[in-house]
Length: 146
Image (cartoon, rainbow, N blue to C red; front, side, top):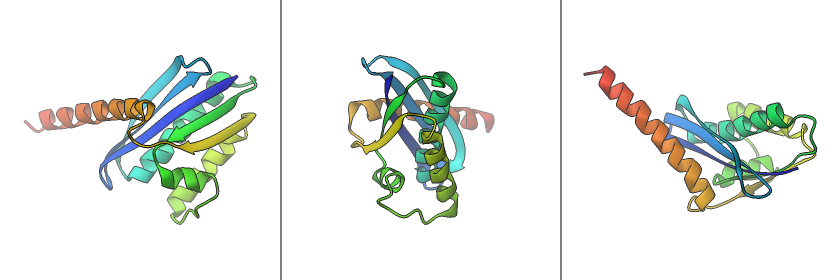
Protein backbone atom coordinates (compact mmCIF):
# COMPACT_ATOMS: atom_id res chain seq x y z
CA UNK A 1 0.00 0.00 0.00
CA UNK A 2 1.37 3.41 -0.97
CA UNK A 3 0.58 6.33 1.31
CA UNK A 4 1.31 10.03 0.86
CA UNK A 5 1.39 12.29 3.91
CA UNK A 6 1.52 16.08 4.07
CA UNK A 7 2.54 17.67 7.37
CA UNK A 8 2.87 21.16 8.78
CA UNK A 9 3.66 22.82 12.05
CA UNK A 10 2.83 26.35 13.12
CA UNK A 11 3.94 28.59 15.95
CA UNK A 12 2.63 32.10 16.44
CA UNK A 13 5.81 33.56 17.79
CA UNK A 14 8.82 31.33 18.17
CA UNK A 15 8.21 29.98 20.72
CA UNK A 16 4.50 30.73 20.84
CA UNK A 17 1.06 29.15 20.56
CA UNK A 18 1.68 26.16 18.33
CA UNK A 19 -0.11 23.38 16.49
CA UNK A 20 0.83 20.36 14.40
CA UNK A 21 -1.14 18.71 11.64
CA UNK A 22 -1.09 16.15 8.91
CA UNK A 23 -3.20 14.66 6.14
CA UNK A 24 -2.87 11.04 5.00
CA UNK A 25 -3.85 10.05 1.43
CA UNK A 26 -4.00 6.71 -0.34
CA UNK A 27 -2.28 6.12 -3.68
CA UNK A 28 -5.45 7.23 -5.48
CA UNK A 29 -5.33 10.65 -3.81
CA UNK A 30 -8.25 9.97 -1.44
CA UNK A 31 -8.03 11.46 2.02
CA UNK A 32 -7.82 8.69 4.62
CA UNK A 33 -7.31 10.77 7.76
CA UNK A 34 -6.34 14.23 8.88
CA UNK A 35 -5.66 15.72 12.26
CA UNK A 36 -4.60 19.00 13.84
CA UNK A 37 -3.45 19.17 17.47
CA UNK A 38 -2.66 22.04 19.79
CA UNK A 39 0.85 21.93 21.31
CA UNK A 40 0.67 24.82 23.78
CA UNK A 41 3.67 27.14 23.79
CA UNK A 42 6.37 25.61 21.63
CA UNK A 43 8.76 26.33 18.78
CA UNK A 44 8.01 25.93 15.10
CA UNK A 45 10.59 23.13 14.81
CA UNK A 46 8.84 21.26 17.63
CA UNK A 47 5.52 21.68 15.82
CA UNK A 48 7.01 20.42 12.53
CA UNK A 49 8.52 17.32 14.13
CA UNK A 50 5.39 16.67 16.18
CA UNK A 51 3.28 16.67 12.99
CA UNK A 52 5.52 14.02 11.43
CA UNK A 53 5.50 11.92 14.59
CA UNK A 54 1.70 12.18 14.82
CA UNK A 55 1.27 11.06 11.22
CA UNK A 56 3.60 8.08 11.58
CA UNK A 57 2.01 7.02 14.89
CA UNK A 58 -1.43 7.14 13.25
CA UNK A 59 -0.20 5.03 10.33
CA UNK A 60 1.46 2.54 12.67
CA UNK A 61 -1.76 2.11 14.66
CA UNK A 62 -4.04 1.87 11.65
CA UNK A 63 -1.94 0.09 9.04
CA UNK A 64 0.11 -2.35 11.07
CA UNK A 65 0.66 -5.67 9.37
CA UNK A 66 0.26 -4.24 5.89
CA UNK A 67 2.98 -3.61 3.35
CA UNK A 68 3.16 0.16 3.59
CA UNK A 69 5.36 2.57 1.65
CA UNK A 70 5.13 6.17 2.82
CA UNK A 71 6.12 9.36 1.05
CA UNK A 72 5.97 12.16 3.60
CA UNK A 73 6.17 15.83 2.65
CA UNK A 74 6.79 18.86 4.85
CA UNK A 75 7.43 22.51 4.11
CA UNK A 76 10.23 22.53 6.70
CA UNK A 77 13.44 22.22 4.72
CA UNK A 78 15.43 22.04 7.97
CA UNK A 79 13.47 19.10 9.42
CA UNK A 80 13.44 17.18 6.12
CA UNK A 81 17.19 17.63 5.70
CA UNK A 82 17.77 16.53 9.29
CA UNK A 83 15.65 13.41 8.76
CA UNK A 84 17.51 12.63 5.54
CA UNK A 85 20.85 12.97 7.35
CA UNK A 86 21.93 16.03 5.37
CA UNK A 87 21.93 18.37 8.38
CA UNK A 88 23.05 17.75 11.93
CA UNK A 89 20.47 18.02 14.71
CA UNK A 90 21.94 20.42 17.25
CA UNK A 91 19.16 20.71 19.83
CA UNK A 92 18.89 17.79 22.26
CA UNK A 93 15.10 18.13 22.28
CA UNK A 94 14.94 17.93 18.47
CA UNK A 95 17.47 15.07 18.46
CA UNK A 96 15.05 13.03 20.59
CA UNK A 97 12.20 13.80 18.18
CA UNK A 98 14.40 13.04 15.16
CA UNK A 99 15.27 9.65 16.64
CA UNK A 100 11.59 8.96 17.33
CA UNK A 101 10.70 9.63 13.69
CA UNK A 102 13.49 7.35 12.47
CA UNK A 103 12.42 4.59 14.88
CA UNK A 104 8.78 4.88 13.78
CA UNK A 105 9.92 4.65 10.16
CA UNK A 106 11.18 1.12 10.79
CA UNK A 107 7.58 -0.14 11.11
CA UNK A 108 7.00 0.41 7.39
CA UNK A 109 8.52 -1.08 4.25
CA UNK A 110 9.83 2.36 3.29
CA UNK A 111 9.50 5.98 4.34
CA UNK A 112 10.88 8.88 2.34
CA UNK A 113 10.94 12.52 3.43
CA UNK A 114 10.54 15.32 0.92
CA UNK A 115 10.29 19.08 1.03
CA UNK A 116 7.51 21.07 -0.63
CA UNK A 117 7.09 24.84 -0.64
CA UNK A 118 4.63 26.39 1.79
CA UNK A 119 2.48 27.38 -1.21
CA UNK A 120 1.89 23.77 -2.26
CA UNK A 121 -1.88 23.21 -2.19
CA UNK A 122 -1.65 20.08 -0.02
CA UNK A 123 0.63 21.73 2.55
CA UNK A 124 -1.54 24.86 2.45
CA UNK A 125 -4.59 22.74 3.27
CA UNK A 126 -2.92 21.39 6.43
CA UNK A 127 -1.74 24.91 7.30
CA UNK A 128 -5.34 26.16 7.00
CA UNK A 129 -6.46 23.53 9.53
CA UNK A 130 -3.72 24.65 11.92
CA UNK A 131 -4.73 28.29 11.63
CA UNK A 132 -8.38 27.42 12.27
CA UNK A 133 -7.33 25.50 15.37
CA UNK A 134 -5.05 28.27 16.64
CA UNK A 135 -7.74 30.90 15.95
CA UNK A 136 -10.22 28.87 18.00
CA UNK A 137 -7.72 28.59 20.86
CA UNK A 138 -7.11 32.33 20.83
CA UNK A 139 -10.83 33.14 20.75
CA UNK A 140 -11.43 30.78 23.68
CA UNK A 141 -8.56 32.34 25.63
CA UNK A 142 -9.83 35.87 25.00
CA UNK A 143 -13.35 34.91 26.06
CA UNK A 144 -11.99 33.50 29.34
CA UNK A 145 -10.50 36.89 30.22
CA UNK A 146 -13.70 38.91 29.65
